[in-house]
Image (tube, rainbow, N blue to C red):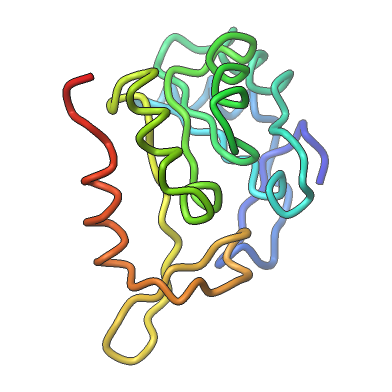
Length: 158
C-alpha cells in the first residue's frame, strides 16, 4: 500500500483509497478533531517500519496531538516516531501481544499517557477474542482479560 494515501475498510478488508493524509488530517482538525491517529495497518504484516515521512508531513500540517501506530515494535521504533516523525503518542498492538513488557518499557520511557495499545477483537461465542497482524491471526487471548493485563503493565506514575 502506498504511504501517501488514507484507506478505509471494514475488518481490514475491502480497503479503498479515500485521500491524502496531510489534506485529510488538516480537514479533520478544521472540523473539530482534537487528536489524529495515523495507523499504518500494513507495516507489521509487511515487516517494515511505519512511514515516518508521512508522519512528519502530517505533524507539520496540524496543531493537535498526533498518534502513530503500525510497525512500532521496539523502544527504537517509538524513538523514531517521537523524534523524527513528530508523534505525540505511539500505538502498539501485535508487538504488545508478542512482547507485553514493551508496554511497560514504553510507558516508563515516555509516560503512560503517550502509549496506546490497540486491541482488535472479534466476538466468538460468549467472549471477545484478540487478533493481531491487521486482524489476520487469532491469538487465543480473551479481549477483556488482555485489556486488564495491559492496564497493569503501564505504570501511571513514571
